[in-house]
Length: 439
Image (tube, rainbow, N blue to C red; front, top):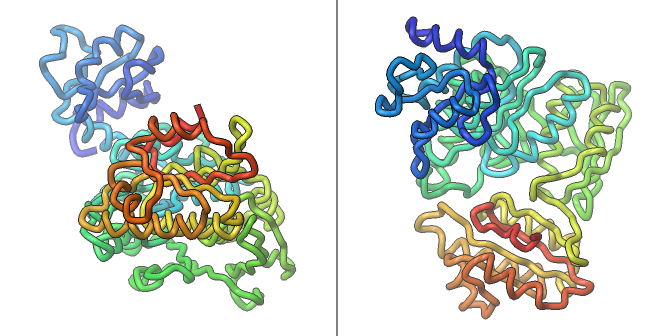
């Protein structure tokens, strides 16, 4: 590392490799890092963390340090110290590291690839959506010693973030799921999204990395033009042994995705995945391509995809209080809403369908038009449409749809109605807190 202080800090981390940033979750022997957040000043909880058993506390506020207590490790910036620890830890581990970014589908793609790769390798993957400047270093620092491959999800809402995450995580392989209309406010429009997500390919090009490129997604082939090592995959009605096994034949995308791909003997293996829609098909294709590249036996790719079950409010089918839900309320932007509504529309008759749609965040000046389009599309997919959130109010008034100020108001009204025979599609971001419907 760059100086003796950082080397000493890394030596302490090696002796106390469990890093914690929440004093309420400290276990004996942890290395606590006090972070200065917008709402919580973690430095103030260093004493509580040490009292709970933390071995050391990294802080950047001198006022919280107790004189003579060598368990306080004062640094210029706690977040930078955490990131530098992760950078050094990654540098010392020689293994494939697959980075996944994109506007939509990052987490589902990560989980599918993790399911496939775990058949043969000890895989360490981003937990939940720990995909930002804080979550990614924590993911790297929690890498078990026996890890053979790491999968890092990388999220961003403005340019420069993916480049910084690549500097920390040092990916050897990379995949961009798609380019859509997520975080338009921060990126400054679609071109900004392309530039921001493309920072992954720029890193790979500069470090002789391998890019997995879905040739069926707009923009991606052009973005990969500067790379020497590209694994291209795509849909084909007639998979051929002439192509290195990266073609996927599509039999169905609704109500379940059913695909086929060539096995080691040139025979087509068919598998059905508990997901639906064109958007999820792209995620499945990515998992097949990565698995085949890393020599996972095709029968095991098939088995892992067929055993996959979505979770954590992503493309889930569930029952609650006698009502059937199709739940996709972890993240929402114009392109993901459009794709999810199309998939729902294919699977369910509008007369028996109900759509609950939360407002979309971080859209800037495009927000009114985006919410209008989403509401219009929801009305085409379902006989009953329920909208929630301030940004949805204008569209609700225009199309005479029922609107609720927030999820609490929606919840109060919703369970007083009779939804017998209906399937309720729920789409929104975690910020909408639509999971209140399931409480």
